[in-house]
Image 1 (cartoon, rainbow over the protein chains, first blue to last red):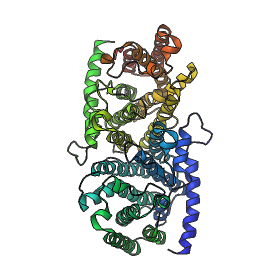
Image 2: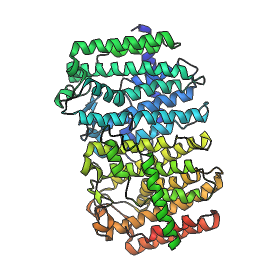
Image 3: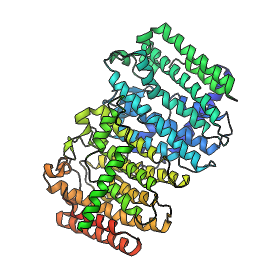
Image 4: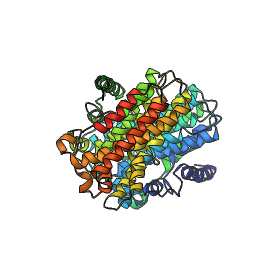
Amino acid sequence: MSSEFDIWMSYQKQTIESILDNYLPNIESTLNNLNEVMRYAVLGHGKRIRPLLVIASAEVGDADSDALKQRIAAVEFIHTYSLIHDDLPAMDNDDLRHGKPTCHKVYGEGLALLAGDTLQTLAFEVLTQDNNLPAHQNLETVKHLANASGFYGMAGGQALDLLNTNKDTSLNELTMMHQKKTGALIAASVHLGLLSCQDYQEEIAIYLKQFAEKIGLAFQIIDDILDYQSPTEILGKTAGKDEEYNKSTFVSLLGIEMAKQYAYRLADEAISIAEDYLPNSQHLIDIAHFILKRDF
Amino acid sequence: MSSEFDIWMSYQKQTIESILDNYLPNIESTLNNLNEVMRYAVLGHGKRIRPLLVIASAEVGDADSDALKQRIAAVEFIHTYSLIHDDLPAMDNDDLRHGKPTCHKVYGEGLALLAGDTLQTLAFEVLTQDNNLPAHQNLETVKHLANASGFYGMAGGQALDLLNTNKDTSLNELTMMHQKKTGALIAASVHLGLLSCQDYQEEIAIYLKQFAEKIGLAFQIIDDILDYQSPTEILGKTAGKDEEYNKSTFVSLLGIEMAKQYAYRLADEAISIAEDYLPNSQHLIDIAHFILKRDF
């Protein structure tokens, strides 16, 4: 990872923070506690991998700046809603997220549930705001994000994950579950980046999708490795949850060394695709390296 | 209520059922249990007031039949998602809905949560499917539904309702809470009906909105009266919940007779608006009468 990338990422994360803040309900909307819960969940933390992917993939073309902001907010709102709901006692029952108590620990389950619901709605709402792109491209963006986060994507993957508890899972089943649960939204992030471009090209979309599928899976494998070997204080969420729930992971199925090699191979393949087929893709390549190197 | 209306409503409810069935994931998608939970929640029951309002308000203009179907499904999916989440232990903790055990009683809280999440996503997804309307009108439809169901609408109203428990509430506060919690989606239903028309007119939208705000509030007042006076077996959901949770209602604030008069007055005003300003509005007027007469 270059130092130039560190500077770029640090700058973009500040930009992302300010975009998310702007698209959340106005801070003075204190009609109820809901806004506070949404802000607690969204702001001030997070790796922002998905928004960074939106930004980096938008660099392959000529992005409209309003459209880009809207897509950045939309993917991160969907991601945050899924974390809030996933942390609830009915799902993973987690007390810690990004090193802070989870939403429902602070605000109660009812408001946490509603904050997740509202962030999902807001994700789609921001995609309907004005920009310089034709309406059909914005509508296509809504469609793509909904498809990636619904029954055939993220939520369907979470349902598979629920079934995965206390059950023998094959490598194929585990891969399919993760392709839906985390991979679909990561793939949507690069596609939404491209969909913020005025010169959107179908051919580029195909290579971006291949790139995203590989780094999405690599990301999840690294996640499994970190869950297995990192202490809670570094992870920022409760470590060892997979083992506690007797869930199959890439580590439990492949062993830690094979799992690492698999993640590195996937990232290498992703980087080759970016180098060979994606114009102006240095930041995408840097993100692929970053995913392998991260230790949190 | 005319017998002609009974026949119309019965026919439309069958049509609505088949539309909802078609837009749910294919019945053979049994990758996980999620589809079964969604189908359990959506199909086979419900008053279908919101889809009926979509259909009746689409009659004021020249509706595109695909667009109409998409809007029917979208409002009912949003409504059903809100019921599933509202019934969860974290919210109203209800065991019974439409005379059947609630989703989480049958499938567990995790899958119920996910089914609600997925139905919300699906609502927006169906609005991005093909029809004969221009893309900007479909995008406007997504925007309107998101606005009505998010922070400033339904979900915000549910957060206010959480605060309403065990607390003195004024008539103004109660009205505002219901305008968001149930009124916003009812108003969105008539607007989405109009937004399925190829000859959409802004002026009609204004009168439809006034009509909807009045019947939305009347609907809620009748709901409070029914919760107060109906046994559980007729209501199909647990009766007396408002009293149990020490919630202010139109009955507790106004008394049952005043509450009834208020609902009748609102419905009369709605009917006058329809008669005076909305073309071809007989079914809207019939629905207003039906809301007052319903005993479930």
